Image (cartoon, rainbow, N blue to C red; front, side, top):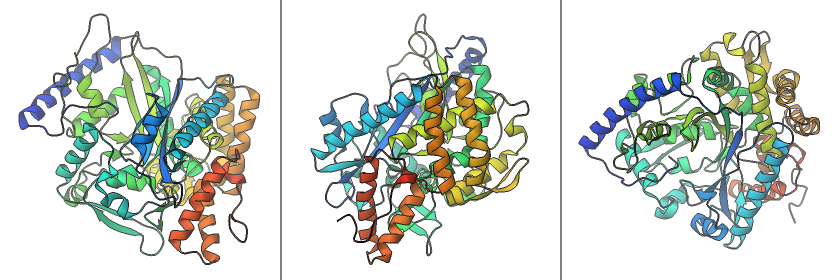
Length: 499
């Protein structure tokens, strides 16, 4: 969905043609995957989505167009909402000081965004859900960014669903129960997406490993506890995104029709399994064929473009998504890890990346892989529990039984991930830097979500209303972002506030 498209409405004949081309793409990809040579250097990449908040009251600031124009760099682009933007970092490698370079790049991109935002009365906030979002944000018709692809996405989701989007998320009190006449809540979800280049024969074990540790990974990085004024899940973004892009009316959900934001339902043996499932299980949302896009299926001496298959893959939102890239010289395959929220700081996000890349390296080389010792249903349930309760979740883990997520991370998973980084050739001082952050966060139980909850509680105990507390907490959060300290070292507000 990153590419622009040419239409927002499609005819029945266009949909029929697209379905035929999609099947043709899939057949071509199957044979190409078996016979072609793919680039496989193990490079990594990051996409970071950021929020924009008004510099005075910290409400959402619909200034993305102005901020992007102010930056003037094609690596900074629109996201769905006018109160958020996205940047793509250069390709890197975890060996040597690569992850430290990633941290510096994240900090530099955030600072450029914040400096541009301040010129337009706003601030940059790297967080999973902007805490000050309200339903009024989406009542303003200007909430959506310009671009045919966003309009087409909204049209097709709402048409397929046939009724309003209904968010039902458990939490304080009766939780959240609200309806929207748009996919606006999807724009509330801002993430850090981690990419890893993988060879065809290695993709299945890497994907299986990423699925197996998805629960602990999201518990460690949770940073989205508030939505529309309510304290909900520690990583509420998981439920918000799932429900905001749910094309199923309730009857289809009851029948077991799969949601388009999907954890999956089985371990795989090949990358092709995921693309085949996408085509077999999900109807097209954006049926723009390659002829409509004026893009060839094949060009002499290059890899197949597979326009229809790639566009369709972009409208099935797996938390670990397969990516095929035809490249300019040689094609490559990537795992796109999509389950982490943005923020809180550059060092926190680099540490989150270190945990994922190190964990995958260790897990795929185990004699008896982790995913062979747990059911897929167990991995899915663990993911939900960790999104709901964060580091406080109690989960079942092979050979350990019931264990608190924080203890599992401190005693087992973080040390394993650090060993994986050493196998990848990461410099020892870089390993030590991120091990300190990850162990400190898990041991104290203070990820971004916990800090936000504790801070709002402290402000409310001093007499602030929820609205005031969320605005004040957002101001303190921005201070923390630029403190250059990981979130578990941030203070809660002292008596008397920021004053």
